[in-house]
Image 1 (cartoon, rainbow, N blue to C red):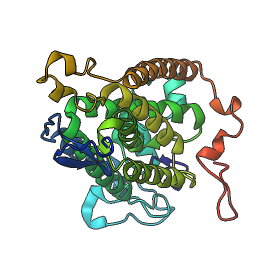
Image 2: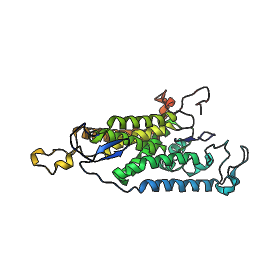
Image 3: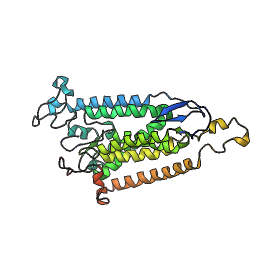
Length: 330
C-alpha cells in the first residue's frame, strides 16, 4: 500500500463406515486415522518467519530514513529507532521503507525483469515487505496456515509449494501490473491456501465433516481475494499464487485412499488393489500438465514483454474495482 504507487501483496471420511478410528482435525475438518499418520516437527515455517523479519530489518537499515529522506512529505516516524525509523506516513502508511529502497533490494518490477535481465526479482520480491503492518499480517497468516501443513506433510512439500506459488504469483503479477513495483509473500501464502483446498478434494474419502471443511476454506479464500480488489493491493499475485498452490496440492499432498494401509494386513483377496483412487491419478496428471503449460506460457509471455491486459480487457477489475472513493488509474 505504498502511497506513491507501490503494490503490496495482501496482506471428511466415508459416512458411517461402522469402524471406530481416532480423528485428527486439520484445515477445518477431521480425517480418519485408521490407516496411520505421522506428525512432522515444523521448523521450516518458523525459519521463513525469522528470515522475513531479518530481511525487513535489513531493508530498514538500508533505507536509513533520517539520512535519505527529503522532508517534503513530513518527518520520519519513530525517529528514536535511528536509521531504522520509518518513512513519513504520507509516503508509506504501513510503517516501512521508501519505494526506491524496495526497488533497489529486489522488488518486482516488469521493466527490470524484461529489459534488464533481472529475472531474480521473481523470487526476491517474495522476501520483501512494504511495512510493519504488511509483514505482521503475512507472517501471522503463514504461522496459522503453514505450521499445520508442515506438520502433516513435511517441510519439503510445503517448502516447494510456498516457493513455487510465490513465483507463480510473481509471474502473473508481472504480466498484468507493469507500471508499479510489488513486494510481499502473499502469493506464496495464497498458494498454501490453494493447496489446502486441493488436498481436501484429492483426499476426499478420508475426511469427515467434508462440507464444514470445504465451506470454511472457501469463505477464507473468498474474503482474502475480495480484499485484493482494493487499490494498491496486488491481487494478481494472490490469484497466481493460489492457482499454483491449488495445482501443486493435487501433485504433492495426495494421501493413500481410505483403508489402504490396514488392508495390507488382510488376506490377499480382501486387500485394496490400488494405493490411490482413479480420480486421484486423474487429478495428479491433469494438475501436472496444467502446471507445466501455465509456467511455460507465463514465462514466454513475460520475457517477450507482452502485456496480458491487451489479451484480457476486463482482467484489471480482478485487482482493483474503482468506486466513488478511489480510482484505479495507477
